[in-house]
Length: 280
Image (cartoon, rainbow, N blue to C red; front, top):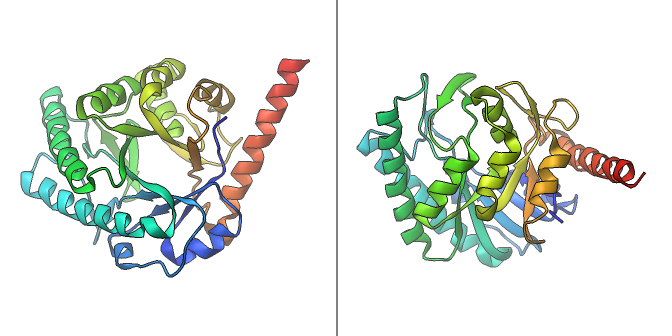
């Protein structure tokens, strides 16, 4: 059974979020958050979501501009070093979650997409070297249409389960599967969500979830979209018991994590209702 009671936090609201007793905490960090040092031990596993922005600049680890890619590589390398320093304050080996990049205002050509993938492979190789096995590197899939800077951008790499599987195999890493991102990409690109989940299932280490609808409505509270979460989690039930799922609800952190806790409650209710129907 997947443990879906993970929670998102920032260092400044970590204590408040831990009051809910989550199964894992995922720190969604800014670049400046890596100056933080824990002051006590937390009896919970840690995932660290690497920054998406720095001083208003979108960080792209697959950038076709080599100077830009290397700068992101350096930021992420420092972040991994800090995450390893945090390990002794948490339980187990930290997970490192990061977006693959490769996004722009327009979808890339096939040639540019291949160049971006090659750049991402170079970034991942460096991050793995920096980690040295001290943390686990997990790339997360993007929807085909993403929200950045309050507008719609296009992602050109790692939007399908099959792409994720191929990339994980080539680079010997595993992934964070964002169910909402995958569902929106399937809606936009005409893919089958169940088939795409099955394609990357052997490589899934960590899960993000929320509801969604259409091709760009992500991060909705459970029940506010049409994502078949019960079926998704049924497929994912083949994963080991220590696989954690974290809700990514828009503004879920407000009111001390109220949206995240509501997501737990609503998802559990849907699981129970589904069992009742199956048993009747």
